[in-house]
Image (cartoon, rainbow, N blue to C red; front, side, top):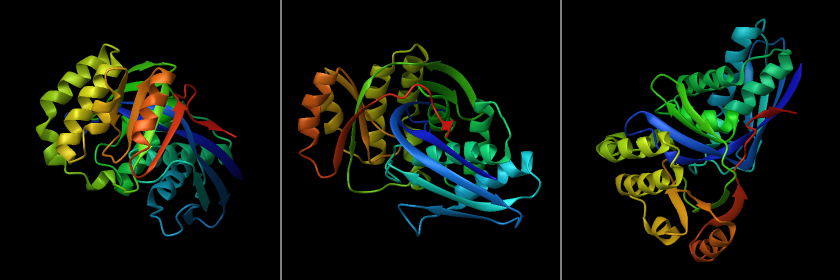
Amino acid sequence: MDGRAVAPAAGTVLNALANGYGSAFAIDAYTEATVELDATGEVTGEVAEAPDADTRLIERCVESVVERFGDGEGGHVRTESEVPMASGLKSSSAAANATVLATLDALGAEMDREDACRLGVEAARDAGVTITGAFDDASASMLGGVTVTDNTDDVLIRRDEPEWDVLVYTPDERSFSADADVARCERVAPMADVVYELASDGDYERAMCVNGLAFCAALGYPTEPIVEAMPESAASLSGTGPSYTAVGDREALERLKDIWDQRDGHTWLTTTQLTGATTK
């Protein structure tokens, strides 16, 4: 009873911490989950890149799928990722999605992907690794493309498939979303409302810029990377940081990469991912 699946990372259009609405887009970088089920009834987890990492989320994902489709199985889940943890690139959502699909694969069970995404979101809440439930991040990773969501009720409002080139800058520091200053984020709710209106209308690039400026101010990150992207590209802080993502013309992003490369950390070019998470 083995299963494997992969799910993409994602970048932010609208951070849901301020008003409960979120928007994110899948990018071409992946987390893979391998699930081996057995009759022990106990679930253990392992993160390949970080042996001491908290594995409650991926273990809870296995347990949730087994509770719905299995017969008390236990087993082991192992994730391996090219997405840096605690960087704002939705590594937790990708891990949850990949684990849910891998467990379904191991059981020979089928589930609508949007519902499978919600199962992972509930597991994230149970594990205490998210404040909002991150349905925006999880839906983008599971379905691909860009999604706009109501994270309060886990409702998908809009989904599109923009074929963007994407530039990602990840500083060396790490930031766990569960540790974010929610009160400061809520203070920028009027700006988040503007971002939501833009995203709802499909104006994702302007939405990203406004979101980035507002949440950099709220969370204490520099706005220079966002300003440096203007006016040729649109950039935002991704999640609660510390990563930034920019979308736009490839040549413009290559010029921006030369600027962002001067900072400490890692900068890389990729694209949007439109197909979402899949079994292997």
